[in-house]
Length: 192
Image (tube, rainbow, N blue to C red):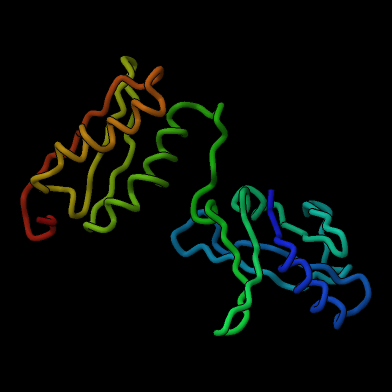
């Protein structure tokens, strides 16, 4: 679920020693599953533990995670480093902005996750985005492009050599290809 390095654990032990007996830490995500998702760590006194919290025990303390944050903290890591610039606590949560889907989730959900997690961050650099509209009965992922992708002269390369090639490598037994349903109109918004 969540990994806390030995150096981060030692840091938390020092901090918790200055708190009331029985205080642990809480790891959470504010606005989970959105572009504005933020991860945090706070003190968690005994009276703040909720019945639906997940307890992740460590040697000298426990980390509590609320039910809403749980799926977004999958594969999260907390580390504490010290160098000539000082000390820093880092929390990396790759699924905070987008809930990770299971390997056995429906095909639509897995393709949608791939587009949001892998493709859209790349397209965003050009002011674009794509949305999965449907998966046809004959196995084609139908995409709608927006922003800078609409009217871009390289859209065919993006669809065939980029998105389709990656999807076929990952889900080739389930996906036959990608189709673009966008009516591309060249304009000021396009990236050249």
